Figure 1 (cartoon, rainbow, N blue to C red):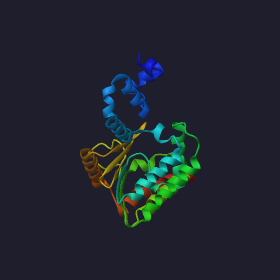
Figure 2 (figure 1 turned 120 degrees about the vertical axis):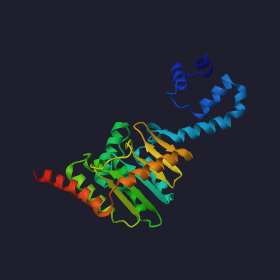
Figure 3 (figure 1 turned 180 degrees about the vertical axis):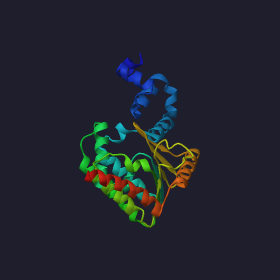
Amino acid sequence: MLAERLGWAHSKVSKLENGRQMPSDSDVQAWCEACAPAGLEELASILSALHTLQTRHAEWKRLLLGGAHGHQDTLTRLHSKARIIHNFECNVVPGLLQTGGYARAILAEVIASQALPNDIDQAVASRMARQQILYDTSKRFHIVITEAVLWYRFAPVPVMLAQLDRLVAATTLPNLRLGVIGFTTAYSRIPDHGFWIIDDKLVQVETMTAELNLTQADEITAYAASFRQFAGLAQYGDQARAIIGDVMSTLRLQVQA
């Protein structure tokens, strides 16, 4: 049997065959040598396709092997090279606009849910360092969030108030356009999930189990069209600040109660 020939556990073969485990380069080579020696001529192209797949569908358990801070550093390098960034979020405040307190709450949940080593201090510091790109006036940012983002309580009220105040301040940045889609808005499409568009060359989507990196032209076109729809529904400037201010007023009443 294949498992015996390769010296692998039967469970490993089953996982590879059923797509429950990603093979390593050496796994692919050993498989080809055992099953299709002639296919060794195509090994380089097979491995290239595998690496592309791993980039497009990067599982969190693999991305976060070095801890939460390592992925933050990767995002910093990616965003620092970008010139135009579009971001839509319907659940959480975008990482580029998070306060330290809010980021700590979000990253703590990630560390707990993924059973990572507790590198929370490094992760928060890395996320805060990434925000320095907002002050690079050669870059342009267009971020749209739903009003639900303002209400979801991922942190205590004082932390949420500080976070909302940070969003108000962000509306005044000269190279950032921040829009808020209010609850009373009639949506033209369902806000399924958040996503990033980097220089119209890459779309990033976070799922519960993986980060998707989409680079095909039709994928980017579809997400760009979605972003334009959401952006067209959003309120900006004074109107956006009014929506945020109403939420802050409600939260302040809770503190005083």
